[in-house]
Length: 243
Ligand SMILES: NC(=O)c1ccc[n+]([C@@H]2O[C@H](COP(=O)([O-])OP(=O)(O)OC[C@H]3O[C@@H](n4cnc5c(N)ncnc54)[C@H](OP(=O)(O)O)[C@@H]3O)[C@@H](O)[C@H]2O)c1
Image 1 (cartoon, rainbow, N blue to C red):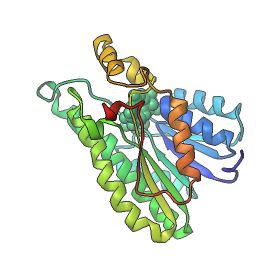
Image 2: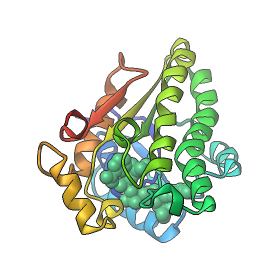
Image 3: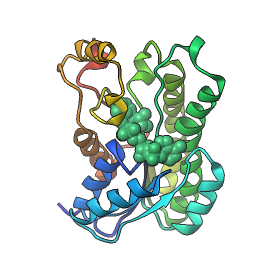
Image 4: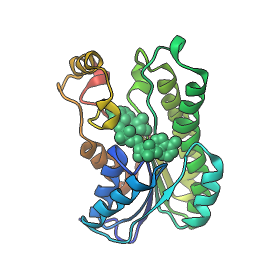
């Protein structure tokens, strides 16, 4: 189904993992995508891979989503975005006592502030156009918490209140905003897990496997195309939170 034909999407973290899977899904549905990450070479490779699966007119922006100057420039360089996906994120694998203060700052700056900045700058445009959709990739750890993830969980939990509030502010402009809360998903982020942590996560996932980035991308496609869903946390976790 080509129901995103004519739609422009900006996808942070679009060079790999969940962000690239979402870009691929949206491109297959006819959308044009702009991918964002900090490394040009991986963005070039990602844009080449997108060109093989649908729309060909994709592009990229190099930048750090936690830097608000990046967003000020992005909205000027790439106006007219219909769908913003905030997928760029960084993980934490250390107890709070062992987490350097600089890393705490980075987790909050990238995962929480980066999403808020992107939403603020593009919401202004969307409100003017009287249409738009914002999708944030949060995490099931925002709800369950997890040892070694206190700051990461806090940064993602902040998105819950953000989306609930923004849905109220944005609805009258025909703009929708939602979070996806994935459980453990096979990407480079989880490839870095210690084998004991991975085994424990699998044990705690009733479906007995990690999710795939494509399964998260299907959820993003649902949110992008369902006109009556806003202010929601959509859980895609293999039952992790139900244990
Ligand atoms: N994988 C999971 O199990 C899982 C579960 C729940 C939630 N999530 C969330 O899903 C999102 C995507 O995760 P993933 O598994 O796809 O991770 P990934 O494979 O490590 O990809 C992360 C992406 O974010 C980009 N990125 C990181 N920091 C950035 C920054 N400061 N500015 C711009 N881009 C940045 C990376 O590119 P560069 O490094 O080149 O900048 C990359 O494109 C994250 O928000 C993560 O917290 C993942």
